Image (cartoon, rainbow, N blue to C red; front, side, top):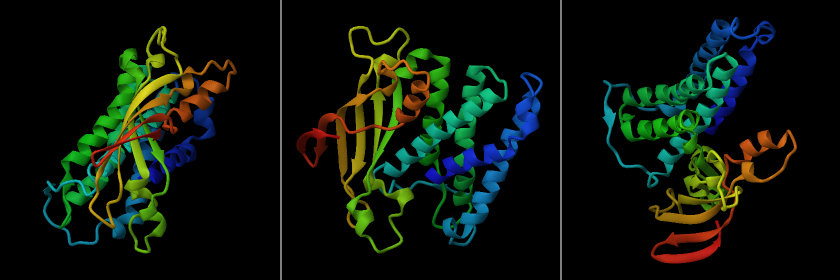
Length: 277
């Protein structure tokens, strides 16, 4: 899944011609919009062609819906949400470049965040042993909508969706095909962060750079049945650090996609652990 984000950015760069860059808004609106749509179509066709035999190893069947439980206690669906969240942000920047208003670009970016994962789900719905996973699609949609809400209602900008990753023992020692880097769920921690410093007017007496986060992970999912790992930690809001350099905001925006280990607690099988999570 994360490779799709890189492919999306690459496809956009390939299709941005010098003529399109040279044109000023709003004259370039149609051409740039077609560039984005064309890049999306080419990307999806290429990804499906490259991974078709890996994704769909069972015979085709009539379209059906999947009602199976998550194989990793929702970790896979939280990954769907994070991919939707990232593509939505990249998509919004692309639609900004295509001369749409900030709010319109945000919602068009959300549509792109949903659309990027939709063909895979439809393909699953047409193959035996799989099915269109409604829960996966719902998580993808939720993740894609959050950046659009940030642009529509500024107060929501204090809510961020972050990830932290370190290769799990299961991934490092497994000699089988699974888990792969893209589904090493035990190595992934997903956090819903609240950063008051991102609200209009700042955080008041609260430090702009400090937030709190609620996170989830699992201990494994291939070698044994997974168990929940819950986290409640402080969170670093890079955009709240008072660095005045012009380049800092762009760097901080990228860093704020990730949760760096901060003091907090972990709840695991009835035990509470204090540490950096």
